[in-house]
Image (cartoon, rainbow, N blue to C red; front, top):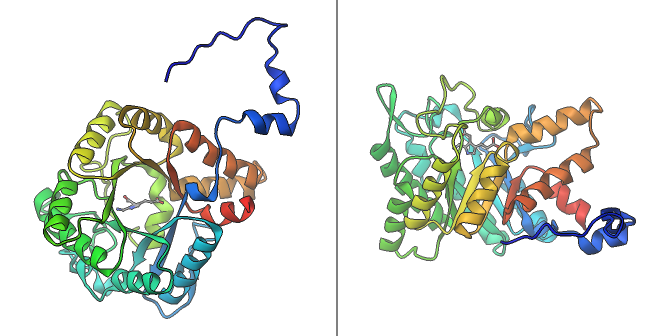
Length: 332
Ligand code: PBG
């Protein structure tokens, strides 16, 4: 994009002319937000309870499969194009080899089938990663202290196939193993799943803002950090290399995560590659806004819409956000 900053000089130029009333501000707005920009992350659980509130994520519940189907229908009716599923499974089903991740009758596979049967026209995104299924909460298979890249990919491939065959339209690998996009893409081609989309969490940073999510999926016992696989927040060029690799390996869409602290990355990725670039306003970002509002430090809707618009302004094609349903209702 080329932009000439030449505007003329005051008083011939008065930028305030374009701000003097709502209609003219509307007329010249460079960025717009609509429900079609939103992806709604939803948590499902295997407890005998329709809705289980998540303490650190005000207004977000873990859902039974039946409730998830209802929310999927609401999303569709509100014009939200897609939902993203995350599981919280019983601790007894978690293991070091994460075998519940590819159970064709597991919680996620069952939820996919139920949603696709009832609401076939919602886009269904499922996270490919092992952390909700491992006993230790890491996104991979441990060998000693290290996450083993190739052993982990073997499981991720099976997980992605189970999800896709259960009806997921988009698989979204969030694990940050090297080479996993290519291996999943090859496995899909070999099994007649060539139409399935891959949204790669390509530039995912080791972040302090994932806390409430770990509470939601029950991995808060995690020891240590994820710095040997998730990115260092000091780095920007490295994000471009990660994205380039994932596109080359067959990703259809890429993601930057978290959102607000990494708007520069969203902008660089979208301007460099011109592929659909998504951003995840993560649990800690959502919780921060909720906490500020609770203390009366900010107005809820204004703070929410300002952040969502910021993602669009930075170049995001869409935003994963826990505000999705509420924001879409407000925009109606
Ligand atoms: C795990 C995963 C995480 C999130 C999405 N997938 C957490 C993590 O990497 O520890 C975070 C989402 C959020 O905080 O809202 N593979």
